[in-house]
Image (cartoon, rainbow, N blue to C red; front, top):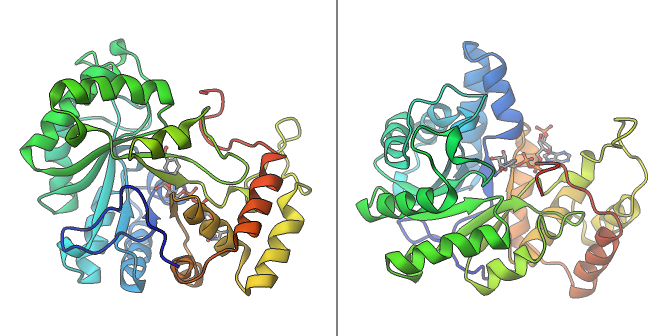
Length: 319
Ligand code: NDP
């Protein structure tokens, strides 16, 4: 039932990391929509604290989500010792959605540690590679930025460094920097990408390349086939797609929900899902995927049916 992920990350206290509890997508809109609304902020904190108490040890946040303070408060509220948790955050060179105050990765880490109320970050990611040197004061391209990520790792304030939404070419170019700076120790350790049966490779060959190079694929948007399939022309939800019949059948066969089947499929692919819910039963239900497995023929069925309907929900037009 346990899937051995490569690499298999552990919290500082030595526990394998669970699937991630996200604080982006729905929560970021909630926070950004009305940041002064105390009820909104408490709701985010409560649900994240509930997730930790339910057994998640892995929290996913980012500079653009603006949810660091809520993640920090949730950790406090849960009462969980810091070293039993894994916190991932993502740096961005610029964004129209935030008032960026920290320019360099080092400044970002200093600021983030205060916002989270902690003295280290488990995993620091470059949020995406879609930036140009003229968009940041320090003139970052991905190689220059990666060199500074390596420098931050050397300080010990960050345990691991990685990336998100990177293609094979992006990975190859930062791996060159890693080689110059000391080799494997400074390779990216994770690539967080959109990954579900309708998008089995966010960019060509990315999953295989990452896995061959010991880079963990983390999946965001894993539940996309359930409710996020929109017709480009009509902007309406597509009601008929291949998994519409397959998922209910599998859910019945395994006595699980369709969401659990999708999340477990991600794990069977040796990738780690990051998911989000505002509903306590769904938060608990998602964790259950560590306790069952899909038969190889059913994984194959999802692969085959999923491949018939390629669909990208995030970063459209970027790949
Ligand atoms: P999911 O695909 O898991 O979608 C979560 C949404 O699904 C929630 O809004 C939730 O709504 C709904 N949901 C949860 N469980 C069920 C269920 N059983 N049945 C039907 N609907 C359900 O993941 P996200 O898109 O939220 O992404 C996860 C995390 O990944 C984000 O929070 C963020 O941290 C990260 N992310 C990273 C990106 C990147 O560029 N690196 C991009 C996007 C996300 P409800 O509250 O109603 O349950």
